[in-house]
Length: 373
Image (cartoon, rainbow, N blue to C red; front, top):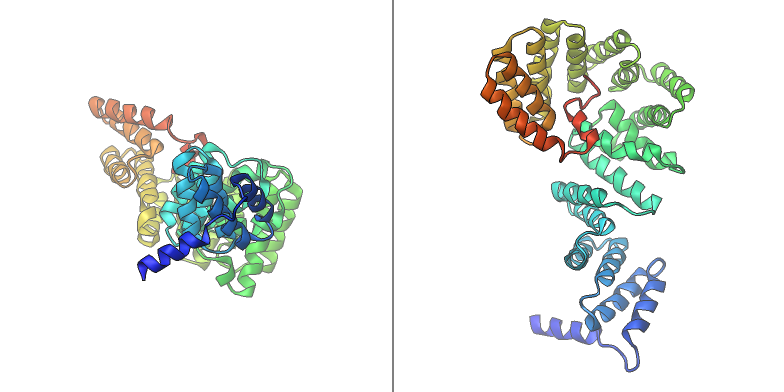
């Protein structure tokens, strides 16, 4: 049976007399957008003649992706990337395939590598990639990472709100779910929150303010609404922001991002005990892979209260959980220095200096995943 299938494939990709590689490549390109199944056949024939045609493998991957043949698409992209390993578009496309195959971490790795190399000038493609990566992070409750995915789109002209607004809403409300899985009322609240947040991100403050007021009026008890409004207020009016985060916690005691923000703002005000109370509640509720945030924040609260040994212990836990996070290394170095542990401080400072040049400058905010100091 195996050999029969192999021979059938060989027969399938035979090239009729007189049909050159150039003929096949031209026909495949013309079919790619409108007749992907035909394009797949043509690209396979062309690649049988020229197996080291890197672009051909990538176009074959794109055609298979449009046909929802994600495993075949993934295989084709990988073959193309062996020939042209620094193609950002192909890496991002590979990430989209891996997402459909439920290989989430590999998808995020591939998309991240593609973004580093550049996604090209095709804005709809960039939107699709960034929105999908944001959705994967949101569903994993990795809200801090997710916001850096959408941010670059706010600086692009011509981004249609419909492509990002619902994802933005999930993000600012910290709703770790798929939009389509929500109830009708939840979707309406998420869409309005996304509209408000997108208006703010694209520097339309009056529109943002109006949308946030409408959100509070129409959905005052919906999970994440007061959290989203608190995030909107916290930089210009920290006291009002703190009040909103506390409302969120009163209405929804399991909203751990709101608890972290309560802790952060109490810390900013110098109230170490109140900060610790909120953060200890948050660490019991946060997903296991997000507890490093809580440990880092608790360490900062201990630093605020001048409890250096406790702060060091929390920072060390956070470093063990996130060894490549530069800001935590910096905080640990500070704590060691204040505690008189010079050698330890110098070691952590050296690691921090090495890591900070590897991270995206925006990524230094990873210690502040919910916008806190």
